[in-house]
Image 1 (cartoon, rainbow, N blue to C red):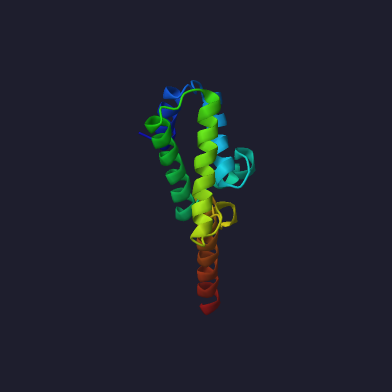
Image 2 (spheres, rainbow, N blue to C red; image 1 turned 90 degrees about the vertical axis):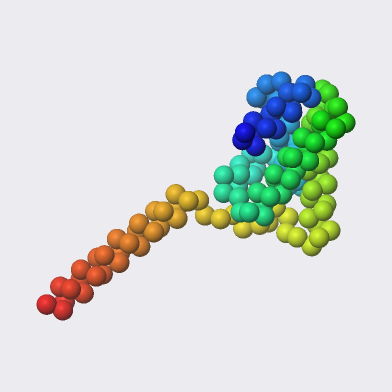
Length: 137
């Protein structure tokens, strides 16, 4: 089961019944973890997180799911508040441990960008190799 489907299942149990409300709940979690930043502010980061940032987000998501279930939280407003509070607590823990806030972590390059860069470097290397052969003849 994917993380999104996993969290979505428990959001539905809490009364967050459709994709729009699920996205709103997730946005509250991001706002808590990222110090008030919204999903749209961090969207570019979401697909290119490093392991530390990914782990913080997964921890936030799993702890939110556990809290929703354990405390039998129902209703959109209460679910949203839970997402936000858990995000804030994860952020507070990172700060207390002396860690880097997730929005300040370096975002790794996208895989496609790295692949393009490698292909470009390979082409350059092949051109240089063929030029050397021509000059040596």
